[in-house]
Image (cartoon, rainbow over all chains, first blue to last red; front, side):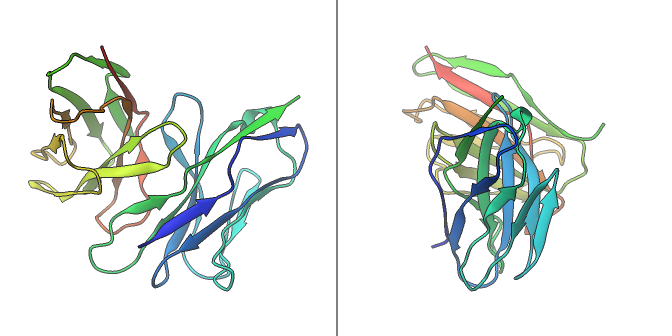
Length: 114
Length: 113
């Protein structure tokens, strides 16, 4: 079945550091890929998405490129802020009849210190 | 403002008690979903509904029940058959079933007394 593997946390960075959170997936067909962010005590917010190979999703300084050859969708940000502290989830949505489910990774907790 | 609301924010359940979590959306979305989140884990799908008066089981439906009598409402009942109900419950919706982008509510944390 479909699965998503993302790097385990927690990840602690200083403000203005470069961020990479790795995400790889296993799926049949051509899934859509997502990054969601969850702030403490809140629901998930869509951060960015990509629907086909080589697409780049971007939002709020975060970027991720859909790499079909390496089945990856790594999240990057050039300069993190304290306000970026949250849990980040990589997810995929399989295509095809009856595929209504998002498959999530376990999440990576990011803490940014001043 | 359009969005998804969940209530209550915190809910306490006694042994042998059924409890119902509310989820309402005013986004005019056809599809709605319930997920369970446990510490250090990703989200797991409990039930989903593509259209009014129709719903399907997800990966972990045992001990839960749902109804979809109105387009904007998708309540989840945690029954006494669910032996480990303590978790964070998230409701989501999408424009239609099979539309990949899902939008989430703020969640309800269920605790057992």
